[in-house]
Image (cartoon, rainbow over all chains, first blue to last red; front, side):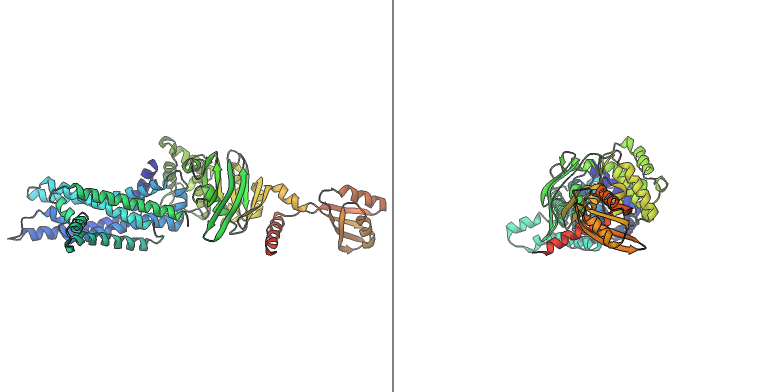
Amino acid sequence: MSGAWAIAKKELRSYFLAPLAYVVITAFLLLNGFFFYAILAVLSQPGASSASPMSLLFGGTVFFWVFLIVTVPVITMRLGAEELKSGTVETLLTAPVTDFEVVLGKFLGALSLYIAAWLPTGLYVWAVSVYSEVDPGPVLGGYLGTVLVGLFFLSVGIFTTFVSKNQVVAAILAFALLLLLLLLSLISYLITDPIWKEVFSYMDLYAAMQAFSRGMVDTRPVLYCLSGTAFFLALAYQALQTRRWR
Amino acid sequence: MIEARELTRTFGQTEAVSRLTFRVDKGDIVGFLGPNGAGKTTTLRMITGFLPPSAGDVVVGGRSAQEDSKAARRLIGYLPENNPLYEDLRVREYLAFRAELKGVPRRDRTRRIGEVLEACDALEVRDRLIGACSKGFRQRVGIADALLADPPVLILDEPTVGLDPAQIAQTRTLIKGLSRDHTVLLSTHILPEVEAICTRALILHRGRLLFDGSVEGLRKGLSGGQLTCTLRAARADAEACLAEIPGVTQVRTVMESGGETRLELETDPALDVREAVVRACAVRGLALLELAARQISLEEAFLSITTDEAAGEAVP
């Protein structure tokens, strides 16, 4: 697995050598910061609900998901598509590394940037703690959920970037698939048949994230996210293998 | 070191490489020749494990490129066609990444990167962005990468394409130097390159192996049977004299001027008739001014081999 580690480090370095990482992190923090300010402003109004600002930040509103389905494709779109387009995939795949190490390395590189983008939000926790008591459960749950959903979504992006040579196509495909995953979250509300309702409720990321951000960690969404990650990484591996036959 | 057995690769309906069998021994420096689209790159990609063969197998250093791919790849330093590199990295960063990927131990990496850059005469671009390097330096960085893990086998796909003449000469000297402790297989469609560097040549045309032997043999095999000579004699006398020699099958006058006649002889390739020509002229009292086996250039040899094949195919 040392090959995967080498690739992950190289990808993280490439992110920060190109402006992409700075653009993504800056835009993410600006929007997220403004959003957090709005949450605090609303909650400070007289008669506002007593909800915790941190649980609203993590999945309490639709903004969390908008950030995610936009940021993730931007982070992942370059990783495979650029290798395929520039032909560097040939040097990569003829080095003594397995195809799976390549996929895993790319995934870990993307995950590092994703986590790097979220890290500064730790300041929000500190800002809130200055003025009021912070319950650690919802904060930790919120971050855990963010990482889990991040793993899942990033794996979708890794899959699409190995499907197309074109970064824009890879990004749009990832965006569409992520949107589909969010729609799957809503299906359980539309279905009346109790068995199917139960089945689709397992896929309800929206509810899962709300539970996480209240500090409730259920194993079902954890399993859903992890198995989804494994599934899309396996698809990415297949996509890369198929490339060899063309 | 490299052994291809019935190596075949198809893309859809097209058979890019067809039942290729050859071996490259340790210490050989082999030129892989063929016109564009002959299947050279496809074959090299199968040897390096980038493309799986449709049928057959290739073994590198005793390891199958398919079943034991990772171990086989460890033995190979590969410079792909067009030498793709990460433009956004500096040369030393790129080589550090490649060294880690190839499992060069951490403590040896810096030393090794210095060594290969020095061997390729590219130390001065160590800190330059690859995207800002000239084509010649990029090529050297590519070769440096191939050398990084000190693999016993080097596979170079068109290593001098797109370089200027001075760079081509440098790159050839470099490759020739490398052949002292490496087995080298390089592909090219430039014949003088093979003459300049290689000891053996493999000629590929439309996915099939047409020739496998020494570079000398490639030239000799085709020049055998042709002589040119100049006599101080009238045309009729000269032709009469030479046509009598056993082993000479055809006499053609090329030029006649000032009492000298220049002729081309077709001879039985199995016989060396040069001595007989000298004697026959002496007996008839004709002065022999020049006698030479016709030197055929590799270009001619190559064209003759590939076009013979094409003509053969045209016949149903």
